[in-house]
Image (cartoon, rainbow, N blue to C red; front, side, top):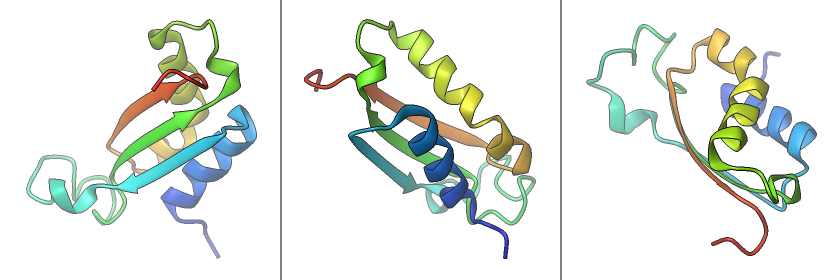
Length: 94
């Protein structure tokens, strides 16, 4: 059985970042009428909000944190995810 895109995201970020907080919110239904929704392969897992807290983000600028996450999620984008919204925090930054 193939993993869902949400499971793929969870596995990639858990392995790569060892987060203390990882919230993955499927926001695809909010984008049902937007371009990219159906082109991305079915539309049920195309848009996500991701909140991550990880020790490895300590001392790293926001742009570099986002680059790290996008690199880890390259296979998910190749599989049809259209958009993600990221919140990346080091412990204590909220």
